[in-house]
Image (tube, rainbow, N blue to C red; front, side):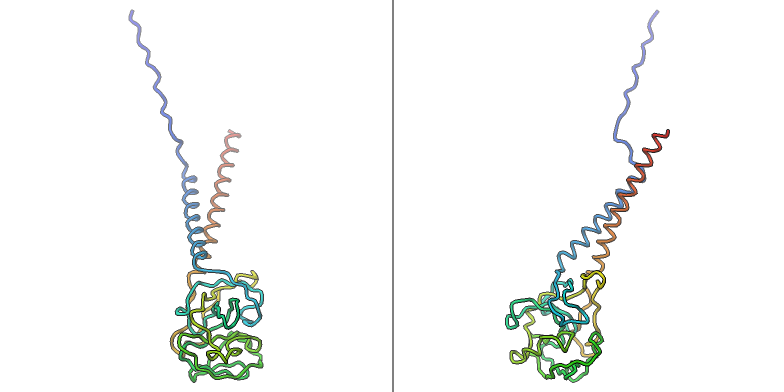
Amino acid sequence: MSKVAERAPSPQVTGRPRRSVASVAQGVVIAIGFVMLVGGFGVIAADYRPYKIPSASMTPTLGIGDTVLARKAGGDAVGRGDIVVFHDDAWGNSQLVKRVVGVGGDTVTGDDRGRLTVNGKPVDEPYLDKNPVLATAFTVTVPESRLFVLGDDRGNSLDSRSHLDVASGSVPASGVVARVEARIVPLSRAAAQPRTVAFDGLGGPLAHRPGPLVPAAWATVIGATLIVLASAMGGVVSLGRRIGKRRG
């Protein structure tokens, strides 16, 4: 009798285990979160720099010791109403933070209560302290390519009024390095710096609208949150599977 040849068992096909739908979704969410986190943080790191306010001259808008974020900008990218970080050798070696109230060609007048008239038009500045202050009265015409800057605390600020004997108190536009867009410290007062409309009736150049700081900050926070939540959910799902196998 002939022996029937026994068939050899078919080799088992091995491969990478299939990923579950939950695992794939987790990976997608983490990837999206990572892109948002890196993208948002990258924009802030590339365009913005922190500055600490050294004096009370910008109160009540900015207090002494506050830390602000300012977007890098030159003097050709600022307008009346912008709060700027600048440097002028005639004013000392440090960088200062003041508000631009006049540009080249403007005639700026201030009374003893700190109220402004620019090119014959009174300017209502809602960010100032409404209490009467003792200030220096002046009238100047700002030279071309220069800026006239004041602190928001008109009764307690060493600004263009303190340097009227040099270029009518103005600073070179080329000395501007950044525009202030937000306060980040203290956290209890952290907020974006709103664009003022106080000078809009004068025509350009006007205060600039905020840059991408707020969207970039939200992207960073949301991206980090997605990564944390997706990682946590993945851990919960994995733990549930292990518990289920033990019970089975």
